[in-house]
Structures are given as structure tokens and as C-alpha cells.
Image (tube, rainbow, N blue to C red; front, side, top):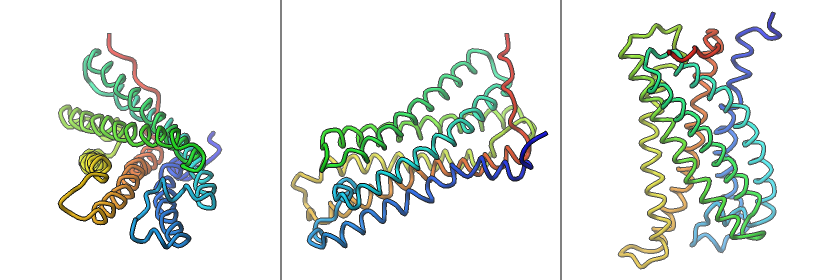
Length: 258
């Protein structure tokens, strides 16, 4: 006997993933606009998120909310990871191929944990506290999150291909095929944005044929877009979690074939 109806349980388990972008996107926008409101002299030098949270009145609440977001990610990750394990186990593929997919799933989980660590580190240690630790956290977050999304998109692509190749029935497949397609295509956009952000990061302090102001605008806006895309990718799993729990598809992984 379950404590909650399946419909309520589906909403409860999907909620953490859904709340991540709902909270973080407005948080990032709020931080930048609050900094500009408090420091209008930066109107001609648009601030990065790092610069915005260096103001303690902004950085302190920002860091607290980031801890809440990290907790939500920690609640969503086990369900997403378990769904991948179950999906891989149900694929009629060879043992070595499944082992490789399991390894990819574990690597994706490790990278997401690293990205979450970097996100906490960079928010807890702002420029006004420890610039080196802040930058270290920032590098870890952006690099690990981009790799996480690339790996997850690869899993989406491979699992979708296997489902279509073997014509697996819907009841044996946890993820919605449409969401796999969406995540793979969205991941390509995210990686392109992350590469553009990295390029802008390295060229913004060099002499270019366009004004430094235009480059700074592009750089700071790209930063917001990349962070928003990161969390929207994670939030997309809420659709799958709700569907798989509501349909009662989550179970124990099948044994690997001998």
C-alpha cells in the first residue's frame, strides 16, 4: 500500500527538477539588475554575475538560494539516474555495450555532482571573499555542467536509437521519445552557447575591431543565456519523471545478459 496516490507521487518527484529553472533563472536576472540599481556607474560596463554577487547585499541571499537549488538537484538526480539505469537494463543489447552505457551514466552523474559543487563554491566565495576560489568554482561549474549535458545528450541519442531499432513497447521504456529528441537538439544549442561564452571570455580583454562595450554586452548576456540553458535542460527531466511515475514504469533494472 502506497502512502500517496500515484498521481501525487508523480508530481512530488517531478517537482524538484521543475523548480530548478523556475528559481534559478529569475535569481540570475535579479542579481544583475539589483547590482545595476545599486551601482548605476556600471551602466556603461555591464556586470557579470560574479561582479553582481560581489556586493554582499546581493551575494548573501544569492548564495543561500543556490544552496536550495543544489538541494533540489540532489533530490532530482537519484530519480533521473535510476531511470537511466532501468532504461539501459531493458535494452536488448549486448553485455559490453550495456556496460559502456552504464559507465556513461555514472560519468554523467559524477560530472553533475562536480558542477553542483562548483556552483556552490563560486556562490559561497565571491570576489569580496576569495577571488581565486570563486574563479575556481566558476571554471568547475561551467566546464562540468557543459560536459554533463553533452554526456546526457549522448545517452538520450543512443537510447532513442535503440528504442526505435528494436521497436520497444512504450511500457518498457521510461523516457518519452520526444523529450529525448528535444534534449539532444537542445544540448547542441547549449554546447554552441558554452563555446561562444568561452570565446567571449578570452577575447573580451583584447583589442577588437568592435567596441569593448559591445563585446561586454555580448559576454554578459551570453553568460545569462548559458546558465539559463543549463538549468532548463535539467528542468526538462521533470516531464519524464512525472510521466514515468504516473504510468508506474519505474522498477528494478533487469539483470545483464550472460
